Image (cartoon, rainbow, N blue to C red):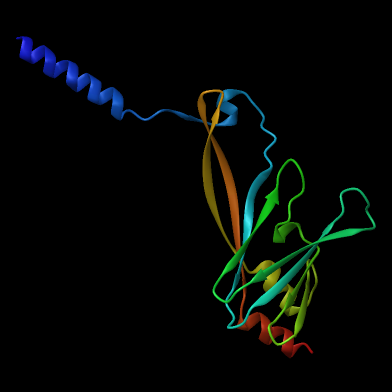
Length: 165
């Protein structure tokens, strides 16, 4: 009988140790979090040479000014640009334009909302996925959903630009 009680106690302990802790949403906890980011953009360089990506954004303090973000992307690599949440970010979706400098010196200017084929290719051809991060919020696990958009600098983009020149 004593052996049976020990086995029952061990089973209960094993069950409670294997039980996952609940992960909450903001709604379930009745809170609103001012997140720094709501996700990010990934920009892949699918070309054979290094590219320099210079993106421009509205200046939050001066409506007539813009700010820039410069990223050097090696062949086969990508850059991660944070999407803003509480404050503006530097994602592709938030940019006004993207200047893409190829290794041969060619510069392709893509403008958000422009009607030319290369701008449309860059800004409108992306894939989207959802990621999650779990953070500790006052001793409880809180889920933060993040949107990820993936863009590509590829041969098709270069060909569209060259055809338009």
